[in-house]
Image (cartoon, rainbow, N blue to C red; front, side, top):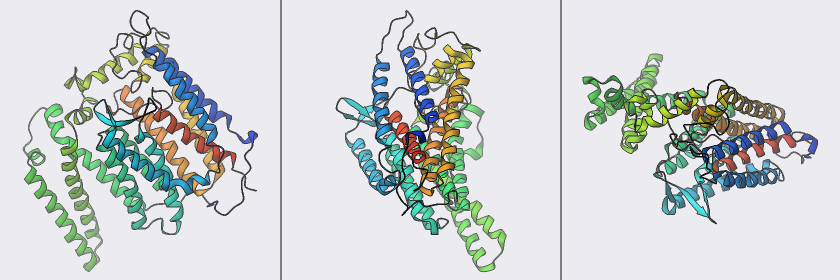
Length: 447
């Protein structure tokens, strides 16, 4: 378990302007400024006319985010541990309200209208989960490796995931997975259980995609894959695997032979994964499954799901080393790039600023993440380390998946590029997270 001090019951910390981490703050500002530039560029058409005022809205959101950033510095960061479950359940309530009364955007009922502005509660739920998991694990230090602690942490994660899947918003749902694993691992949760859960996740996706893989990638029939098309056969196979797993577990208990344990684990993992893959295929939309296919072979559906990848790769590739110049991109200005101010903002940057500009942005993100982890090492408080790790992994996952999908090495998931993509909810959530890390740094000295 990383972190050596609970920090509870200790004296107040004295924040100081000289303790403010300006590097973290100015890197965040730089990313926001670059984001505004390319949101502006995304609104310019092929004849040079500005057709969108999204950049103005983004500047307003940035102003609000910066106010929030400094407001979060006022209370002790440990107060957020006290408020963690209140914040968590308030956000759960917001997700339920969103399902009932939310606005449908791009096929997902994920937005609430407040005072003329649209907010996406699922974005704030990510940070709420980080706080709730961190607070729970910090209070469960003595039993951190127990099965009960693991299950409670998992349930805290699954509840918002289910509500967000019902919207449906698969991309946002995926972000909760690395948050759970990062916070749980750093807190010292049972590593075997984490490995088993990760294995189930990988196998579930593999089994869910196999039928579509056969149809579009292999393009020939394999008789054994009919298992995944016949519902009764699939359920029977699942039951058999689970039954063998139970028998092996009983064999291990009464004989003490180690090999029974591995048999039980194997059959249980496959059985559970088969069952969940059936539920997953039943709930996923066709376009969501196709996204898992076209990132490997975009030409399967060049005018449908593959269009995003093809146009993004064209934009990135045409940028060359130095790019075509700011406001001189063609893919965005001719409106070939879908969701170009949000999901594919990096494609515009790569086309207009080239490889050099892309590296600059990635170096800024790397600086932010490295500095963030360095701050956590200075603080050393358990709750701070858990929460800070969850926040930084949330940002890293957004970075990895968003840039990965623009380069065609990740499926299209609709995950924005934090600090740069158009939108206020993800921006405010990320700013709140970095503000919390800044708060930890300001109070790293105890008096």
